[in-house]
Image 1 (cartoon, helix red, strand yellow):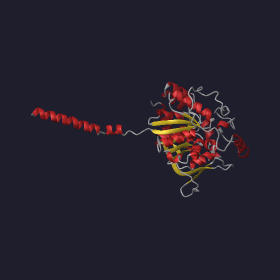
Image 2: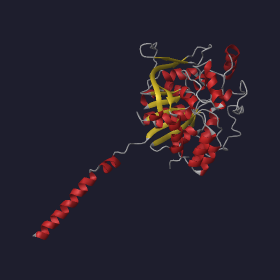
Image 3: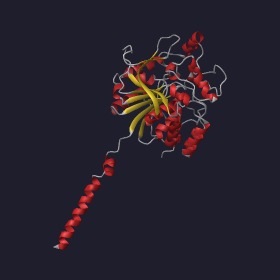
Length: 375
């Protein structure tokens, strides 16, 4: 009898232990581990921002889309394909986007400069700097010229699907789950919104690098100061928006669940220094480290801030909720940022956005190194 009772007690103890294990926090956490954050990266090339987001734990990159800005969209798509090959991520699709802005043109921009002064940066239309700088003068290419790609020509091919259609398909396939991370002009987003009025409302949100509110020089480094000085006389002008102001205005008036704006303002306290590139390259895999080490230093961390704000909002040290739009009148303020606090907005459909005004540069750099080394 005693042995029978002992056996019953032993079995009961085992069952109780199993029940506790099944109901333990560790087991519950394993069952309830959050799904990866689904994103689409829209940009004009392949940069450290892409590496960060592709390598970050808990992030599922549904695809890369290219748009004309710093580079023409066909060149940007080729760079994205090659970057994915270097990272061993060729399963991520690349969809080429708009080659030209909605309204703005290279000739119109040249005409604007004869009326209102020289622009600091013109991206794919850039032929020379207005004055000597430490940064190299980028080669001038025709829209479909794919020669001299920085890491060689890709062997993989872009999707036949256009970028705007790819974005629309993804937000319908994953309603309320897809965040768009925008690092370039917003032509593709505007096209998607015009093709499908539900596009923005079906996305989880939009994080974009663009716009300028009131940036000031922070770093003493000469190359950093060169980019900050343009804001002394034109504090509301920024390239991504200026390249396609009409697209930016359409996107700003769409019904997004959440918009996070990363303007030029926080970038003046940051720099893609040689020291940071070497740190990141050393932490990354050999192939990826070679790509990172070959990036040109001296530029602010524009797109990288946008990626970092998405990955870890704790890096933000100052922000404000504002209604944001962009000037589309062809005059001296063409492409300039417009903003209003509550009660002062014109009420033409502007969507309230969270505007990031400053970040912690050290946390930003540490985050970059950490995510590029993630396995």
